Length: 351
Ligand code: PAP
Image (cartoon, rainbow, N blue to C red; front, top):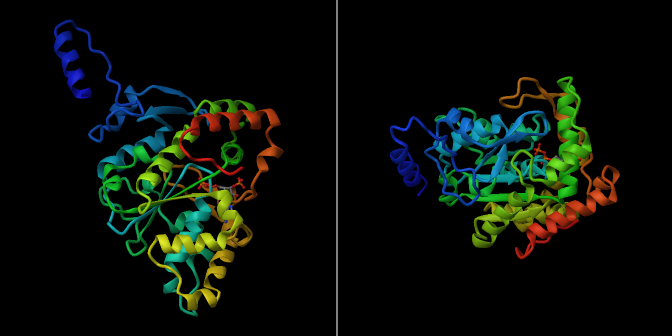
């Protein structure tokens, strides 16, 4: 339909000397444009606003992205094809990705560990154990995948995932979190990154204003959550919807649930032998954050010129820390926005 209207406009304006810029699918419900592969063309036509880190955020298929993410996204939308056994760990930033990557990785690789082998999680940070779709797998022939471990992580919203994933039978595990805690976690993370680049971070109040207006990388947050929520209702066997808060409350039960969903349940014998508990403990905030690799090593995020301290991915790991940073009014405002946006969806996020 879009192409047809573009065609009509082109014919009507022919010879007038006027050529209107084409806006490539910036609306949420608009038809997907996987053929919109020329990244520079995409960039030059999309509406943009100033984002959190002083960079521009582009509106593409209903969501905001910085240039780096957009480039990766356009590329995976065109090139990426999953293996049928791939499992995607999906999330909006700062909602529990690192933890979920660690848990899924530990669960899937547990059978490989003999008495003398230790988990890679003890020497590599979780982000280095599970590749990132939009940052690392955009090439036609990505070399940075261990095909024996079918885990891939992504922050891409459900409606923007490559069609090859949506139409596949691949499983997706989604995690989300109270919006206030997600915001505070994100602000601290970006403030740290900015300081490491010797740039003053955006004041918290200004960042909050942007977040409440849906302006954040991969935002609006509520649409991100809703996309996966609705998909999980439609395809419950394919999409597992989790919350950080519930997972905190009973991690061991979630470890079992994750294993079952990924098709590698624990036998009663292994469960009684303490395997669930071992994984729960190994991936806990306390254990992971005290490992040398996560305390003192650096992480080279694809596309980012400066190395990132692994420790920035482990801040507090608590529920409700927002109250130490936002006023009650700010908290109530974001709760109100979330409540309105989620209304009628059947989803009520734990606080
Ligand atoms: P990412 O999107 O950059 O990968 P992500 O891992 O989703 O970040 O979120 C980081 C949050 O998870 C941090 O929350 P905080 O800022 O409120 O503290 C981080 O502390 C928390 N986190 C990291 N690892 C764990 C863990 N093992 N258990 C619980 N929370 C964790």
